[in-house]
Amino acid sequence: MEQTTSLERIVVDPAVCGGKPCVRGTRIYIAIILDALAEGLTPEEVIAHYPSLSLDDIHSALAYAAELARENVWKVTA
Image (tube, rainbow, N blue to C red; front, top):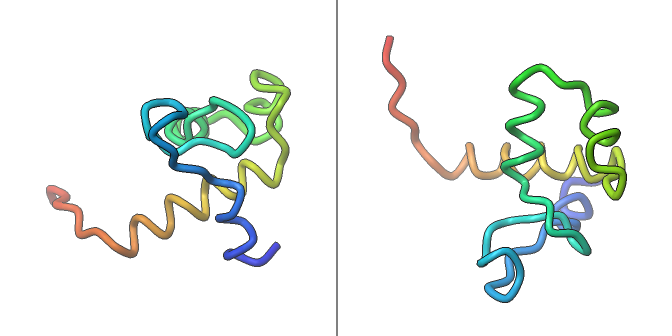
C-alpha cells in the first residue's frame, strides 16, 4: 500500500472523537493502536481487541506516526 493511500484511512474531524486522529469509519484513536503496539501486542492481537480494524488500518496508524516523527523534533535524554 502506498503511503498517501495509507494516510487516507486516517481522519481528523472536530465532530469525531474531539478532533483526535482516528481510523476512518471508527472511533478508534490512532494513539490507542500505537500504544498497544508499543506495549508489545502484535497487529493481530490489536485486531482481536478491535475487530473493526484491519491490518491496513494498523499500517496506516504506523504511517501516520512516521509522518509526525518526520515533522517534529523530540527531546530525548541520553
